[in-house]
Length: 590
Image 1 (cartoon, rainbow, N blue to C red):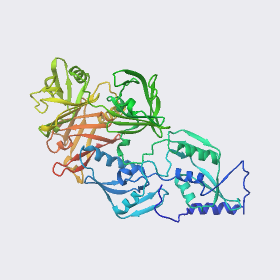
Image 2 (tube, rainbow, N blue to C red):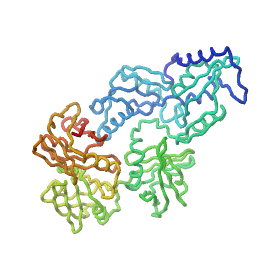
Image 3 (spheres, one colour):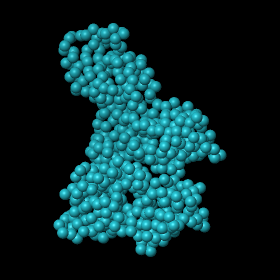
Image 4 (cartoon, rainbow, N blue to C red):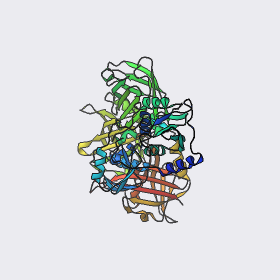
């Protein structure tokens, strides 16, 4: 880590501890060499320890763009025009959600100064403007080449001893954290002598613990661990875009093209470039080479405190056979690594150009399909959000919301451009009656689009046998009684009062009733809970577009639920200004 200023830092608790222990006896005899070894504060071993316990500031790079310091919570930022108070690490996810919600826009983030930053040595500095922050950020060494060591950690508590120039013990200190240990070293002079009370437990980046019994073993362990993991010292905020327990969904959603391979520090990309990998839910994986040959193998995942691991096993494809650490899952990208110079980068194939009409027909008929969005001549048809298509035999298709069912016809054809087209005719609902060209196809998501004239239809697959425990729990809680809107905020505007007097009843068959007062009237709408193709929980509400209940119509992001409270959010775009804002909707049980 780069030090920006020279600070005279001495830990008050350390001074007190040294004073108290030195009062017990005037001096303590130095332990025998086989019991304890001293090291000098400026030795290479001491430096390795200091670098291991330096503070890592890369977790908030989405805000400050600097890995050698972080901004102390709470602070305020303005994201694409939306003002947010960031009170914890979890708040950084909201910034990422705003950035990711609208594709192809320019993401802008403004920090509201003053802010306080914490440096690698845990020193705090107050900054009053962006220029000061940028000046410090320019001093950072990014890309994992800085001094701090993040691939190994100490397990606390650890006992340390200090000595005078005659190697007589002068004090005992117990440290409980990286910060305590870093500040302990900051309070030493270069020629001060210290020793560590062994054995000491270390924790590797993959969660494995091991014990060292001497200075030499400690130094060797840290030295070996310096470069065996990805320290994530970059500004790629998308590299954490998956919950650990949803990696399997991501892998099996559609095939993956191999874009880069490195094994034992040798670049093998030319040999394996654009091999096609297909992960199946039964744990089997197939790899198709560029000549069409198929290689069969197996895959599995496991989750550790340090992250997720993917194991690949092949009899033939030995360069892929390894337990890989999953260090990035971005939009249609997975990056794998393992110590010793091993790396694989894969890109998701979301359009199968070889799929024919029969393939698309089979996919459509397998399950129901939920409308995520639909645009007709550039106008979004919000009244159809969450409606369910069922593609039946003999060219029959139904579109329903629970209490409303439309019926029409469908067929799959190939247009003059050789692209698959889903032709729907539904006289009672003209919003979906169109010849929809296929643009994207995965196991759980279909996208049809003619961008030039403003037609777009996005469908999400929902199958009866998809028994997601979280989805079922949310549904069961919502079934249990009547609910009210306790909060509805659109950006800075609170419109909760528009729903005063309404009670909401979440009924079976995706029907929701909104009753005004004790005697009605009752307006019926649609509701459903699903987990989408990205692994996110979504709550669909649809009361059409009439005021005031039409304000609730949206595919909401699930935030939290208890027996008496449901919180949802949505990132929307203002039609006039183009700026993003956050909607927050909270239901509470009556």
